[in-house]
Amino acid sequence: MATGPGRSGPILGAGSVLRLIRDGDAVTRAAIARRTGLARSTVAQRVDALLAHQLVYEAGDEASTGGRPATVLAFNHRAGVVLVADLGATHSRLALSDLSGQPLAEVAFDMEIADGPEAVLGSICEHFEALLERAGRHGGEVRGIGVGVPGPVDFPAGRPVNPPIMPGWDGFSIPGWFASRYDAPVLVDNDVNIMALGEHWSHWRELDHLLYVKVGTGIGSGIVSGRTIHRGADGAAGDIGHIRVSDHDDAVCRCGNLGCLEAVAGGRALALALSADGIDASGSREVVELVRAGRPEAILKVREAGRVLGDVLAGCVNFFNPGAIVVGGDIAEAQHHLLAGIREVVFQRSLPLATRDLTIANSRLGDRAGVIGAAIMVIDHVLAPEAVDRALQLSSVA
Ligand SMILES: [Zn+2]
Image 1 (tube, helix red, strand yellow):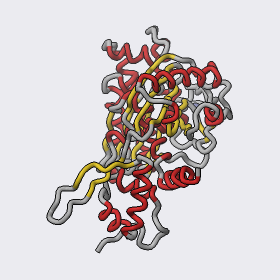
Image 2: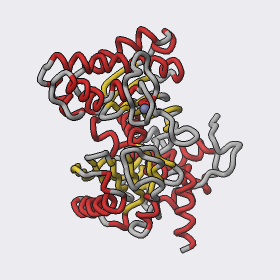
Image 3: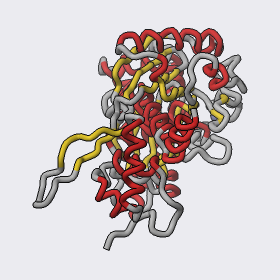
């Protein structure tokens, strides 16, 4: 006996039918009718609307088991593009993706976020145009824009909130700035959140709960809970860099507190500690180079940073019980020394039940995690059932 979401709930629209096709849960008209409980004539109407808008196409016949073969419907991931930008403090990566999340063109370049929103977004826009041209697409095909920034964000409003390393950006409406240039929704999130989404979608989709930790100049984390980003009441969830660690009250953090995790174990802190020992290192990149060159002082410091981070993460594991902790950022890429320190402490300090199935691994996407996650965030938004229904309704009125 077929059961489905349509049996007792409201009548499902074309957007919900698109989701079934996109997820591969029901790909023929008969299967959609069985799955949703909608009348066959209603399913035919919904599918016709999706076909007319080129959101799906007929991909041939199902292998027949006798009787007339059914036509297989497939999601048309070429039905539009999304533009995304992962903005760092001094470096940015941009991508143009199709609606499956597959990047069609990418570019990375140095850029100072401290130059302020007008200068930075103006340059981003020029690069967006170049990406569209390179892929042979045009602005009218842009379905949505995603931007990740290195600071806290009021997600519903798309505005950075008191970002410490982004002078001039506090309260600036990024969607408002793009509104006159593209007729598409603009989503803005913290960079670590989109990285968490990118890693989860690319390599850990079978898990419901994941913690992504970025260890670069500073330290932050993105929480995937129930397969979606957990932002908290004000968008501050996951800011583990400012959790106090024990025995380090001599470390002054940029937030004004003493003994914060990132003031002890972040890339900037490690560079300062090495400099104090007479080893030349001005930032996290130099720390990574020293580790790669096999300098024991640097290896020792990175491994110890892993243990300090592990102490904080052990608490996070007990509290949140993720299926995986994925570690990214410059310092994580310095071979496996950071990871070794983290594993050592987390498995020792967390409750056995919380670590029974826990995996702790390095990021596999590296510095592409942000643009891939931003694309997924935007695609999920523009292809959400209610958004698709609204778009179809609007175009039938017009
Ligand atoms: Zn702090």
